[in-house]
Image (cartoon, rainbow, N blue to C red; front, side, top):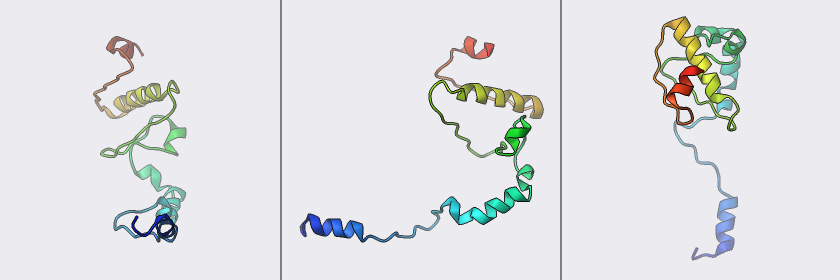
Length: 110
């Protein structure tokens, strides 16, 4: 700050984006993504959730991370439990669960 607050403020306001290799925005792939869904290719990727209406929006892709977020008590854990049951039944998959919210007996009863 040897040149003063005004100079610092001017530098910040006049700063130009610096391209970072490997950093993208979804908008960079908008056309490709729209084609992917418009041409029905989404069904070729991943496995069914067990809900046809959900499969149009999301499919489970092995090896990819899915994060489910929401406000407390909005049904996130219930939805994930139901999804895991669907996947176990339709694909023979097994899962390990760790829930900091539910005791084992309570979780098993659901």
